[in-house]
Length: 449
Image 1 (cartoon, helix red, strand yellow):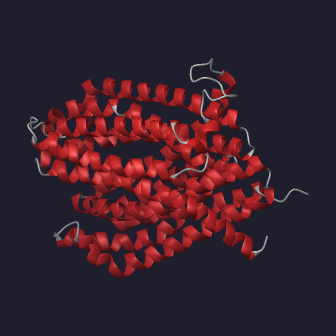
Image 2 (image 1 turned 90 degrees about the vertical axis):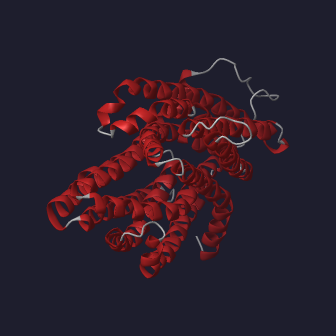
Image 3 (image 1 turned 180 degrees about the horizontal axis):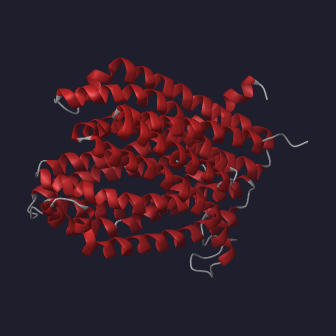
């Protein structure tokens, strides 16, 4: 297709991606504000919240991965003009969200008696239990919100979820102020108050998005219970659930392999020393912020490709996928320049310890390079997910992160040149994943003869 076609598809992808990116940034902002407000209570509550969220995140990531099938299949049905199928995928997605939410929360409650086995300080373990249990319950509304959000984005309405996410951040900050510090006549609950604020904010967000979708005329045809669609509690079909899990479980594996690699990298940094671990966290926090842009592009690309498959426009698949990839790389190059030129000034906002800041600035230079590959791999994975191609990409991510990145990081970092070696290993894994996923997308979108 012509350059004009590529530019047209890029504009359409950006129009969908922009509110998604803002929504992703708002979720990150909620975590940052929680840390700032809890940190004012003391270092022990802050450490306890970090410990709790490290465990919560693994259940959250797996659940998010499983539920990615909702956006792919709803988008495909929407493109094929099958509103009843959109409604049915939403119904079954809600069942999966409830099942994995309750199951994940149950596992977290089951871990409580063994929290002291994770090697954390005694005072941290003593403080974490009530907070951990509250945020475990919040996994249920979190996953239900993700299903409703993916449904809304897949049928072409991303602005509502974005607005509701931003509002939930504001509500969370207000409730933190009331419940952590004891304002407006409420008791000062400290860390436990932050847990209640998070839970309440997430429940309100689900209720708000449900109400917005339920009364929005533009999605009425795809909503369960409308004429021609099954009711919410009509019999559920096992084959439909299997279809969704066939996409969702490998997608969850991809996310777990990548997340697990970064967790392992943090452990290796800790083996090298306290300063490398602190510098690693600073550099990774910076890279995580800029990563929200390619992540939003990845979600939008997955939705647009799924919809295009449903419409039968095979010729538009490459312009959508490679147009998004080019856009992501362009953004990454811009942030690369920022990290290289302004790295020393950026890290000073996190710490005044010269040794940590110096190492973090050096790591940011590696981050500047690897984020180009990080953006490429996440967009490539999203494009392939839109094609419902998840098994081979899962194998690619395992190869890139666990066969190449971590062993290389260990030998170059722990056994070799130190902290920089760990990040060289991560950069290698991300580069291999980006290249192989792009090649896979090129093969899968070969023009039909």
